[in-house]
Image (tube, rainbow, N blue to C red):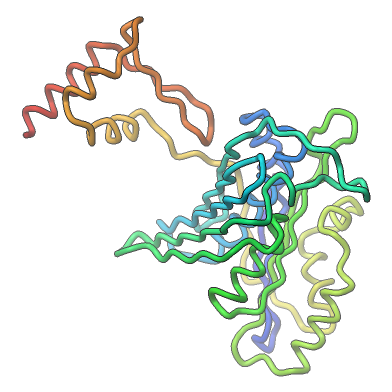
Length: 296
C-alpha cells in the first residue's frame, strides 16, 4: 500500500515529505494505457500532486496541477485531496519517444520545456488560489521546485521518479520527496540541507534499495533531529459519479440536452480520470430537459 509522511526538523527550520506512489502510478498506467514516457510524466505529476495536496490539511481542499508544454504529450493534469489521494490524465497517452543518450526516458521532450505549470488550490471557501510559472525543463520535479521559488518564494527541492520494467514497461517503483526551507532557518541549516540534497540519490534508486520513506527523509535531513508529524495511506481515487454528470448536463439548455442522444438513442459520458462510462438514454435526457424547463 502506498504511504505518505510529513516530517520537520526539531528546530523548525526544514520540512520534508516523502511518498511511495507505486500503486497509484500502476493504477494510472492501467486506466490510461500510457506509453513508457507518458507513464513517467503522469506518474511524476501524480506524485508531486500527492505531496503538495497533503500539505493543505483542510478536509475539503483540492489541489490541481496542470502542465502544458509544447511537447507531443500535450497537457498533463493531476488532482489531489488534502490526504494525498490523487488522480490524473495525460492528453496524448500514446506518445512514444526514443530514450535519452543516458538511457533515461525523455520526459522533458514529451512534455516540452516551453509552456506553463499552473497550480490551483481550492480550499472550499471563496475563490481558489491560482499561480503559474513558466516551465523550467518539462521534467516535472524541476518545474515544481521553480514554482515554489518564483511564485511562493520558498526554497524547495522536489524529487519525483518512476521506474519501469525495461521489457514490458510496467511500473515497478514510483515515489517522491518535497523538502522546503521554512521561515527563520539560518544559513547553517540551509547550507547543511544543500549539501544533503547534492548527495541524494534518485528517489527510485532509494526505493529500489529497499529504503522506507522514513529513511529517505532521514537521509535528506542528515545532521538534523527529525520528527514525523503524520503519515497516512494514499490511493488513486476518482470522485466521479452519475450525479456529477447529471449536474454537469443540467447547466445546458433543455434543447441541447435533448440533442445529446446519438443515432442509437443514447449518450455516453466518459470520465477522463478513471475512464468509467456513464450512459443516458433518450428518455432520461428528455426527463432532465423537462426538469430544466420546469425550473426555468
